[in-house]
Length: 299
Image (cartoon, rainbow, N blue to C red; front, side, top):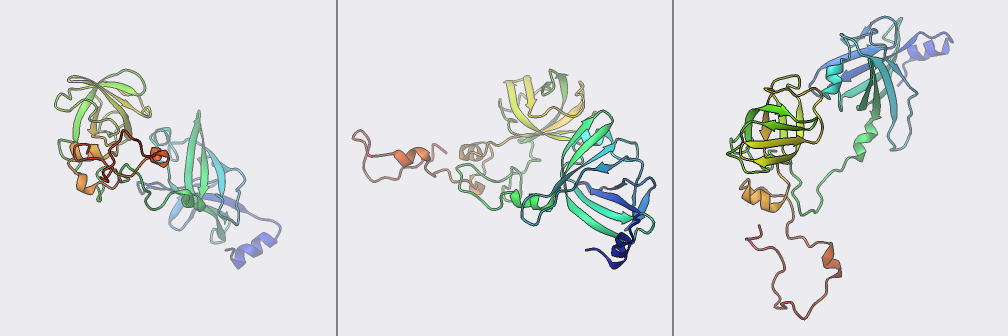
């Protein structure tokens, strides 16, 4: 909503307006940036001018389509840093875009509110996509009928304690074989593939504090290799420490045999597949009226 004072300023024909961005990261840290040539301050936050922030045209609609824009800026020591961007610390951060009279910042209006989308880096310049609040309406809400479980491993409803030594171990990298594959310390007490579909949390080294997803746990005994889905932002060096957390492929068999947690399984393992749509009675099958589902041994 535009205030009377800002309306009067806009109607004057000679405006002194600047755009201000307030970014709140998921870790709670708040940053302010402006395209004005001096720092501005309001609502207890200083909006820094030294980052070279600029924005493209803001597309807004009256329907449910996603409002979007883009912002461009320079990396600086007191603003956005290359390491923070590469580590994904600005992913899904909340952003508010203000239009403010830099001569009197009390005359301002909010133009946009949403989240940061894809962040791209080109040398010492970054480019970030701004996604409007309607983006949240594109996210699935509620549950679906699936054979597999829809819970996140270790969540409150799941109930698996991921701090249990059966499901987590801390060790260090022995060798970085390529961007996504590394040789790790001994995992002889864990079955082959135990950490596939799991998570890796870096404890030391350049990637400390960053979490990734494990694609595969390869090899056996002491010759184990961990492959992640996405290459860590920074180079992995021998001795870098991390914690591996066991993975779950969401199947009923895995829930029962690996985690002993079938009572909390939230899938529908007996749900018939697509092949049942075209199924028909056959002479060589048993027709005794019994239930056609998995047995306890299958689970």
